Amino acid sequence: MLAIVDFDPFDADAKAWEDYFSYYNTIAKTSLSPREYKFWLKESLKGKQKKFKLLYKDDSLVLVMTSFTKKDTSGNEMLFIAMETILTEQCIDLSTTTANTILQLMDDYHFGSFRIATANPLIIDMIGSFNGQILNKINFYQLSRNNINRELLNTWQKNKYIETGKLKLTRYEYVPEGLYSEYAALLTTLMNDIVRTDNREYFEETVERVKQKMELFKKNDVKMLLLMLSDLNDILVGMSIMLVYPGSTIANQEMTGIIGKYRNKKLAAYLKAMMTEETFSRFPGVETIETNCYEANKAIIHLNETFGFVPKETSLQFEVDAEHVVKFSGAQGNCF
Image (cartoon, rainbow, N blue to C red; front, side, top):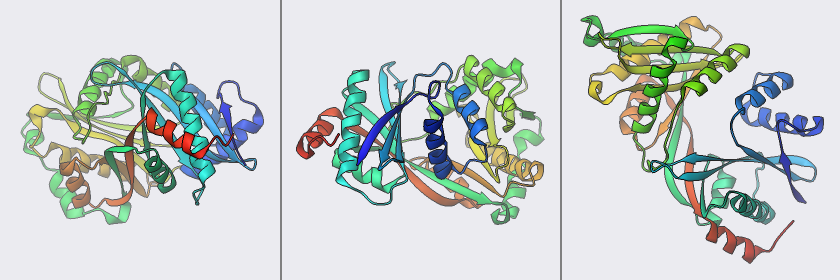
């Protein structure tokens, strides 16, 4: 039997928290303790409107659904639903229960369609039942310490724009407070410039969010390495970001990007080489670097694979119209 339960991180009992953390730890294999993760999640959700739905099968948590809204490039709100499951076999009740829950969410938000991203084959199969249309594919990669193309790394660490003084590289631990505004503006530009099949989603970083993230990282001992490229007038033109969570053997490459004026000058390769060397040197416990990029971004895929990154998994972004979910739900019957 399947049942859906609302989960409010700010007002949940001990049992709900135990279930949620156990689920999350199964999916993400976090090194945080339950207490640390509870603090992390609540702090990271401040100021954000997210709804959590927990799906139980025979009293065991098997799926978590998270919904939130974002703006598109026209300034209109879009509904996003994230789902992960630990189930290994599909059942009609899962699809039907999920469809009914999605319809409840869409009534709450008043949207006629929604977006969903997942790498889980069962959820991908279920979205096919809702006639979901693929928007983007996101490839995930990993690079082991022993699998780096060392010859290429040494080559990429040399760049005439740096060596002749046309640009300069600065290393930081966390974003300096004096750079919050410039960092937020550059990250917004770079995120929206990423090559992808569907680019209607709008990404925006703000000074307030940067401040919140830096405080959260420091409180939770999340290490951040930041490489910034700037011109002779101290105008930021590129960056590379790496995060290392406490106790983890994996470092997360969040972004490596260059503004349009300075592209095609091998600067992204330079930043990736410098960041990789810095990460493995500074964190001897890190064995793997993980990163991701849109499948449409062929240049970055080539860069990653040439450097030694190997594919890990692929996540799909779908768009689904409410009418298809209604038709599916009606055809299968309500299983609540």
